[in-house]
Image 1: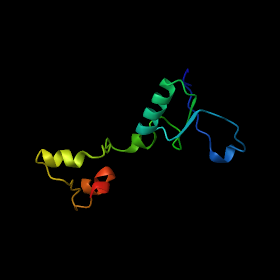
Image 2: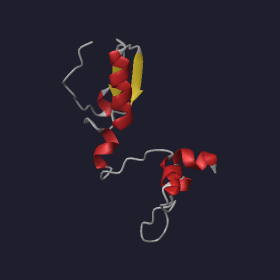
Image 3: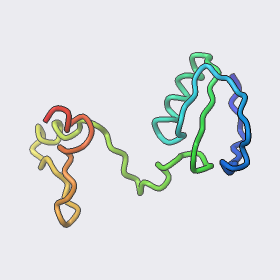
Image 4: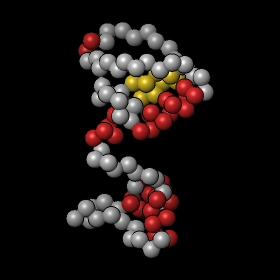
Length: 104
């Protein structure tokens, strides 16, 4: 598979009909979407990626460098670090996000 190098943003109102098929359709071309697209293409799947922002990188380009790595809270606790991250008002704690929340 040869990936298209052209990325063209289209206003939703300009798409009056859609007739396309792919083995794998990925919604979002951020970090996870790009990784999924890469792996699917590496397996020789025909991949279609949609992105609402109209550019590569998706919302990750606006994330300020923060990428949540699920489950890291337990590792930090094992190394003696605090289990939460304070943003000044103490509103964000790692144990409340992602996989850590599922484990309680």
